[in-house]
Image 1 (cartoon, rainbow, N blue to C red):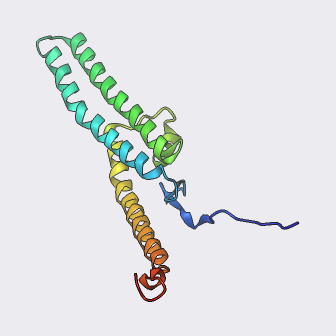
Image 2: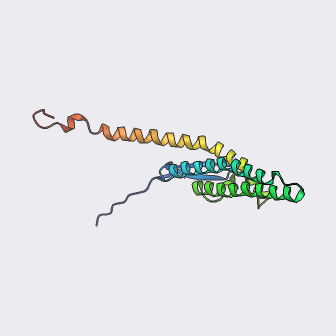
Image 3: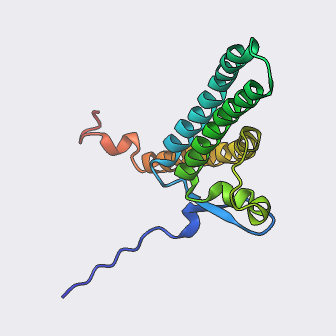
Length: 170
């Protein structure tokens, strides 16, 4: 009986991204066909959420502009807080869908250790994406260059002379 053994790719297709000084990390693979789409869609989702927030906050401010008193001020602050918390919870879910569960808990580990119920505010989340985006772009660019190199290498096997018919006619 003949046995044929094939093996999968080794770890060279994995990239470890360290998120803090404790050594916590996430792992991504440029061989994951969904990675680029998940990152681009997730990043766009975060930007869309961030862009929509100021209008929601203006509406809340208008709603309470004519009211006076401590009670209405507290209601206004609570509504503004709800908008920010909703943004943050959605953004945490987006980060987790791209990089795996607990990504921002790892990134903000020192805070979570002291405050387990911590929810990063919008500025914290935007900071994370501002730092990780250039690294993801480097990975994407490196992957595209590698694909191009591999394509050229495959095509080099098939020279025009390989396709000539007998008698020298193409």
